[in-house]
Image (spheres, helix red, strand yellow):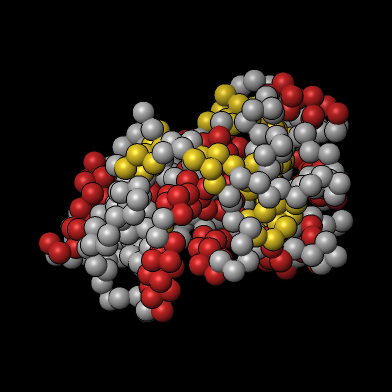
Amino acid sequence: MALIPAGPYTPFQRVRPIKASAPIETGEMAIGAFRLDAEPVTNAEFLDFVARRPEWRKSRVKPLFADARYLRRWPSDLSLPDDQARDEPVTNVSWFAAEAYCRARGLRLPTTDQWEYALADNGRDKAGVRLRSLAWFAEPNPSRLPAIGAGRANGFGLRDMVGLVWEWTLDFNAYATSAESRDPNGKDSGQFCGGAAAGVSDPTDYLAFMRYAMRASLKADYTADNVGFRCAGDAS
Amino acid sequence: MRIPFIFAVMIAALAAYAPAPANAHDMQQMQHDMSMDAAQPLPGRSVYNLDSKWTRQDGVDVAIGSLSGKPVIAAMVYTSYPDMCPAIVADMMWIEKHLPPDAAGQVQFALFSFDAAVDTPSRLKVYADEHGLELSRWSLYHGDEDAVRELAAALGVSYRPDGHGGFDHAAVISLLDDKGEVVFQQRGTEARSDELLAKVSGIIGAQD
């Protein structure tokens, strides 16, 4: 795992407090140091997990915790399509399954703020991340995913933050209300209880819109061909 | 209201044609079969498959599955919010008030707090008393952050701490059947929860 040092972080989405008189929060927040898997979790690693935890095998997983596409590329409970798949990132895993895997290692999924902070990499190589993201978005999903670890590591020592799979975060559903479209006079004003979104910190950041929209489209039992995860833990 | 009526006709027909138990042994067997039903594993989609632990307003630690056996109208809230969240509880109280008389005792109302830090069981008890929630029908639950996160994920309730001790969250009222499967969800608060009320009456009619 890579040690991610503490530092300042400006969340992408701003929140307008429910009291209209209170100021919109724009400021930086502090992210504490934490550890993050240097690469996404692989099929081989997830296979070890389901071997030890039968309730997460595809034949046994409860539909509350994962939809019908769970591990759909695996031919059976405890086998992978071929050896090459061992080093490919595991996908078709639900939030519940990803979180159970991380907990079995004494870890958690990273929060959205932790993940975004890790991607931001203290501002290093912003242009490179942007180019790789745009190239990735422009491609259709490949029929099979490349192995992890092929890309260059960022300044924190993390690989594959963009360009391989989308990744679950612990609080993926924190922004799942399309809150930026909230209109106080609109029909859906009763759908959400609390502060409204008040725009974003950088409206030109198309890539951040994409990432937040992707997470907002998920539900905890969803499994998709291009959604994987990595785990996070305390710094010590 | 068509479905309950059809069920009622079917049940009446079954009652008319099924042979009555011939003796006490048959009756015991019937009761045995019924208790076996109750011990069957939960449906795979049941929210009661969550193993998260909660503490009720009376201080008793319970699994969420302790609610099984009756339909439940459930929502996630927190009690320190001044303005809008009470609309969720108000909607639930409206439903309680408008249930058909024969259904009133068959439905449970459950509130799960987002606020692991502030909404202690004793605070939830005070909230229930202040709002006149009848504790034979209502129960309020305190859980840790993990329990809250899991339940919110299972019910599809988005939320986040607002940084000032509160929570921004989706307003969702879920109707669970007696085994904990989500039958219907009302998203957003309404002055009259007619659709949810009809669904409650529907599953109670189906059980009779």
